[in-house]
Length: 305
Image 1 (tube, rainbow, N blue to C red):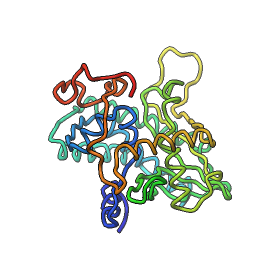
Image 2 (image 1 turned 120 degrees about the horizontal axis):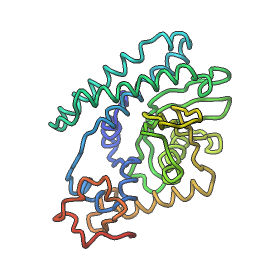
Image 3 (image 1 turned 90 degrees about the vertical axis):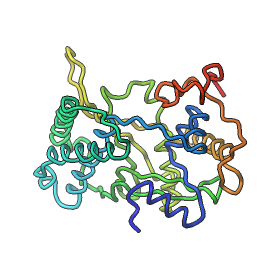
Image 4 (image 1 turned 90 degrees about the horizontal axis):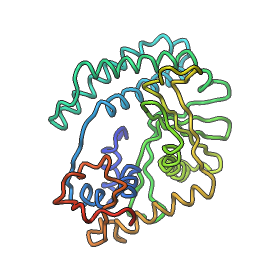
């Protein structure tokens, strides 16, 4: 069975009698435990599609295809491939697929064109400066979308699942990259809030593929849709961010993941329906339940757990 989607990973885990968790589940719980409960225990799925998600998926596929071609063939072959056409076709197919899944039309041709134009500029920038980011010298592409499906450190009944966007090998060292799309790039506050995803991937890639943690580094590869206007200094379309991933940072993330698992799941790996799941105001901004005062009364929302 080829593991290409989260559903594939979940099916494989279920065949072993185990539940799966993902970074997105963990992150949702951190931002608001009640949102996690409503979504995963009560099965109330509220999903707002957007062109940001469609564009992000398309840019992932284009960049991954480029790098696969470059490392398996040549940089010349990668540059010759019509990445712009792939971008447009993938955006259209992802848009249609999302409409089929949600029944919602959520964009128009003008917005689609704007996102596409931004993507073309990113691709052009990347092709011209690719050598500053990825080199074939002493480097091997281990793969793209490498599946992670591994028992958690806290329970053999629960498996951590995910996909590593890009994995490179340099001698005995491994780098796990996660591709992110952003409007203008990440500011310091955003950087400080990020890191858990790749720290978790580092831990469980190490565990699943038997690579020492100290031999793994992690990096966010952030592509910017827009550049600031009326700025005198040169601006880059690509931002690289290596989050802290030494022992202190890794242990902090591990503790938070353990707290999530011990609260949200019973010892036999089932959802803990009797736990307390507070509503946190810090998670309201993008929460689909923020205006549903029956499920999440305003008076119950707190600043901290």
